[in-house]
Length: 159
Image (cartoon, rainbow, N blue to C red; front, side, top):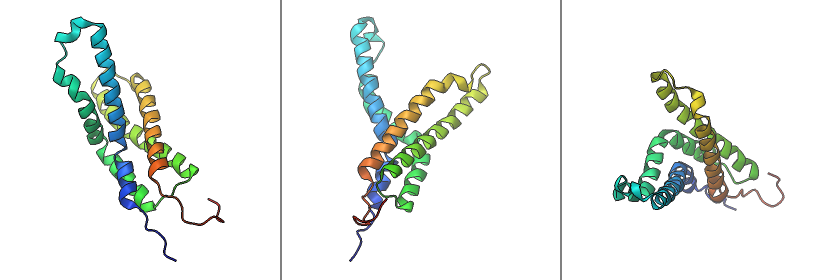
C-alpha cells in the first residue's frame, strides 16, 4: 500500500502568499472606502488622481507580498519541510505562529521608525499591531484549513 505524497508545492504556495491575500482584501477595502469618501465629498475629486484610485487594489497586495517576503518564505518553508497535516490543533498553531511572524517583522520596521524620531513611541502603533496580528492570524488559519492535506493515518488512529 503506497502512501500519497505530501503536496509540498500547494502547501508552500498557500502559506507564502498569505500576505498577498491579506493585501488584496486590504486594497479592496481601501478602494471602497476612498471611493465612498470621494462620493460624499466632491471637493476632493481634483486632489485624488484616477490612477491612484484604480491601482490601489493591485498595488496593495504586491507591496504586502514584498514587505513580508522574507519572513513568509521562511515560514512557508518550515511548514512544508515539517510536513504538517490538517487538524484543528495544527490550524490553530500555524495561525498563531504566522501572526507572530508577521507581527515581529512589523515590529522591526516600527523599531527603525521609532529610533529616528524623538516623540515616536511603540505605544503609538498598538492598534495597528493588533489589527495586523488578528488579520494575519485569520489569513494563516484559513490557509491551513483550506490547503493542508488530511492525515492518511487511517480511521482508527487519533490525532
